[in-house]
Length: 503
Ligand code: MSP
Image 1 (tube, rainbow, N blue to C red):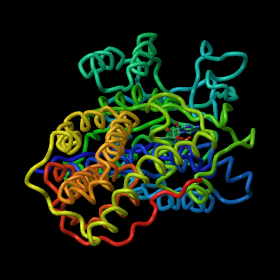
Image 2 (cartoon, rainbow, N blue to C red):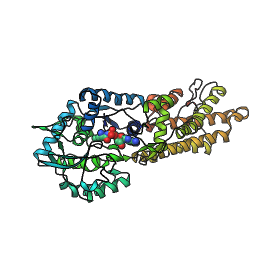
Image 3 (tube, rainbow, N blue to C red):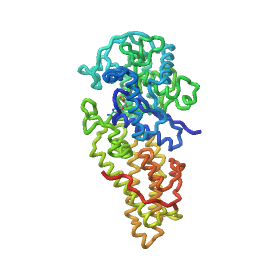
Image 4 (cartoon, helix red, strand yellow):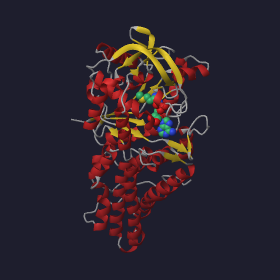
């Protein structure tokens, strides 16, 4: 049976245009989704837009447009980003869609009917920027812990009985050690829950842009209960007999930024426990990017536009840099000089050069035909040929632990070994005195390039495709399993073009 894999991005607020932080979260999911597909999984990769709430309503007002017209417009920018970054999502959900409204209604009614939701009054702090409630003890110098402004709110509100789930949550974290990753985030969440949970306000009455509470039109659902439910809506939760729901729920991985871990690792499992639904298998919280050392913010005017970056440097170049530069989970600093360094040294000089040297030699010295697979190899040939083949288990683990940078570092070690092998074997001098040995060397290198390119497909899909096309690897032999095969050789190649222009 084909195993399933359900991965989600957070859904993006449509109060503003997409920036590098949004592209980063989705990219990490795209890399995971592409890898899992190549590794034989039936993947459901979901992303989308979070279109309700006070923040979005205010953004629409400031532009003088009705909220629906506004969200239709901004959501399109996020959809355009998918194409620009070459993302391979299977679905795009918008919280203003009927399938989502139906599933919000269903989860609300379930929670209400089983006594998890009750009507009362909220008085306390609220941050519109974070769309979050804060208790008095969390306020620092009149601001939220995130630094966002807060306002005092007093209004009738439905509450979710979050306090009741404290022990269950702690037991769940204890029994599911890899539920929250990385470990530092897990500790942070556990100490937050141990500090005591208060019941959570889950409806608002002071504005109207949201999902109406069933049978109580004065209230709209708290935007986070609405938003988190998107992960169910996309599996057609409102119709549980549906095949998608039984195949894909619970999700395998919710990828989030560190700022929204509490919503995903505390509130979300509590809502699901209360609704008697299975809990997702893992929440991974990645770090934040700064721009040349400064916090990225609209007010500082230093927002990095992914569309501009891709136009200037190329999509694979940006994808590679974002996944390689920073250990996934840590914060990172975006700098143009670092980006250019990576493009020139890793992509152009190391990988690009390897491909260029090998294919040019084949083109010039072997009548444009890749040598066929030889019967006899020397130890140094086999060492190179087997270095990825024998480590597939480790590569799979690195992916399952979201260690994208380490995965790439390992592949680049193979690239560096392959470049050293070219220097040591010096096929240009073999040409004169040992033509057969030259063929073995060039075969070995092409076989290594084949494996590297298969492994790099999730990260740099366009370039990998160009290489695999160039050496004529059939589409059905581009999955991870095919690494174990051997390239048969004997195919004619065209003049190679440089893969990555130097900047
Ligand atoms: N709408 C909520 C998520 C609801 S999910 C049920 C939300 N949206 S957001 O648009 O504000 O943020 C989406 C993601 O972008 C978050 O994971 C956030 O961490 C990420 N990033 C925003 N700025 C970022 C950086 N500067 N760097 C890296 N990621 C950042 O939160």
